[in-house]
Structure formats: C-alpha cells, structure tokens
Image 1: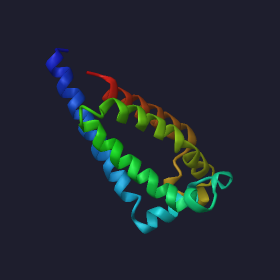
Image 2: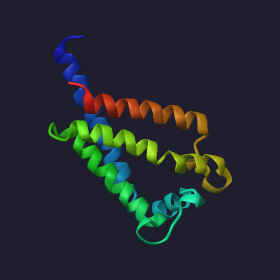
Image 3: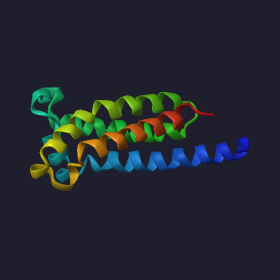
Length: 133
C-alpha cells in the first residue's frame, strides 16, 4: 500500500471513529440513556456526590465527545487515541455488569465474549488512529 493510500485509510478511520464517539457521547445526555447507563454501573462502584452514576455518565459522554474530536486534530491525536483506549478499559466493568443482567438491560446487554472482542478491536482501532502516521 502506498504512503498516500495509508494516509487516506487513516483519515477515513479517524473520521469514522470520531463520528462514532461523538454520537455516542451526545447520547449520554438523553434522559433515558442516562438512566440506563447509570443503572449499568456496578453497585460496588456506585457512590454519592461528584462520582454519582449520573455524573459519571455525563463525564463519560464528554470524554467520548472530546476524544472523538481529538482524533481529528493533529495536535491532540496521540493523546486522544491513548485516552480513548484507557476510557474503553475504564467503562468495561459497566458492560460486564450489563451482560450479566440481560433480563434488566435487554439489547444493551451484549454477551460478554462478543463485547470483550469488540472492545479489544475498538481499543486497537483508536490506538492505530491516534498513534499511526
């Protein structure tokens, strides 16, 4: 693959990831999504005050928006790629909790193994988007 083709592929990857993360982040501000995502936080991680579940949902939405936009800016691309990878690891316990409570979360409760594989692929993609070229 020519260097020009690699640049085009990386640019397309960054744009797709940016759209995915920004749209996902914006969804965190919808009341129904906030309720569901707040409920997905495992009970052992729930606290009151600044780190209350609703606040964490808002914070993670802001992280997704900032990370997505950051992938598009050369000056923040590396930081955003690494931060999004860390973010995906940090939110995984909520996905595990949802997977274990399919009766409560329905379609949001993606089975654990496919979710883990998808999360690993996504981590790889944000790292490539952030660190490559």
